[in-house]
Length: 105
Image (cartoon, rainbow, N blue to C red; front, side, top):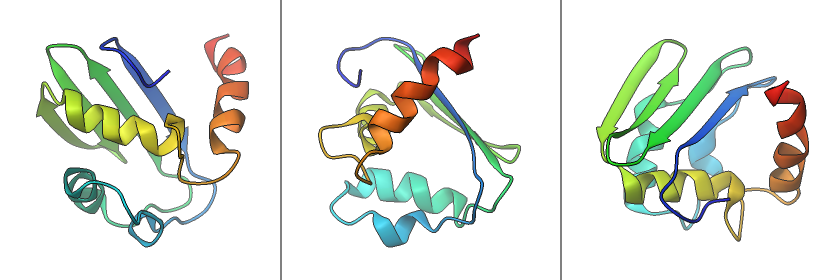
């Protein structure tokens, strides 16, 4: 899911306040820079993260847009937070993937 250079999108609506930087030990400095752009995530806010190969990595949080031209490496690092070999929290990858069919319908 996180391998290859293909279009990827994840949309999330947060149900509680989240301080990502407190939980991101061991992630790359580029990923930390990207996360720090948004600061704290509040309950009810929504993320939309999309990677289009050769074009851009686009991220939107609560209407705030940050686009990185051809952010292939950064996109891979960001998507690995949830879908990589060692996701941010146990069970998160399985939980998100299990919701994909419902989100697509």
